[in-house]
Amino acid sequence: KLNNVYIPKNLDDAMLQLDKIISPESQAKVKVIPEDSVCMALHGRLGQWMILNWGFYGGSRLSHYLRSAGVTFPDDMADFLILAYHRKLNGKPIEVKALAPIFREKRKKEFEAEKKQGKVIQEETRKRDTTKQKGNR
Image 1 (cartoon, rainbow, N blue to C red):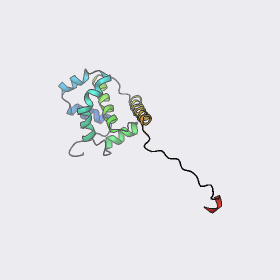
Image 2: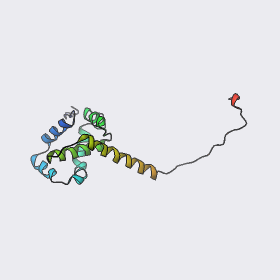
Image 3: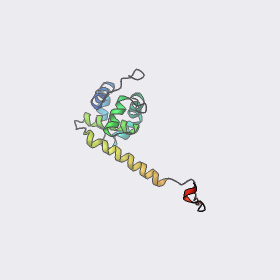
Image 4: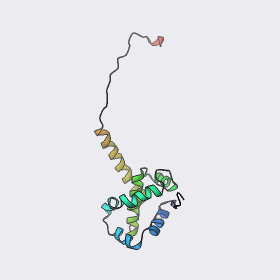
């Protein structure tokens, strides 16, 4: 527990905890959201709740489990669990080994895009002092 909130140990445990904290009415609403937009729809509330209460930045046991599955960024961890929960509610297989690389690739593409847009703050060229000989250093 962290701040009196139980932290799941793995994906199955997280799905059980979500079943406990999300009402049947809310589960029905989550179930009908299209899979390609469920993360966007739920990240601001449920996703942020998971990040904060399940200790994704603090290195909780659930965050370690998700890192070992290949999901390393806290926002991606929340989205991974939201998508997994959506699939569970709809009776679809979660397929951790297929799902985790999607989040890894997404993060990699975002990093590469940011790197390309990066701006050089200062550039300098240094001249070597050729008067010094190798043996005199």
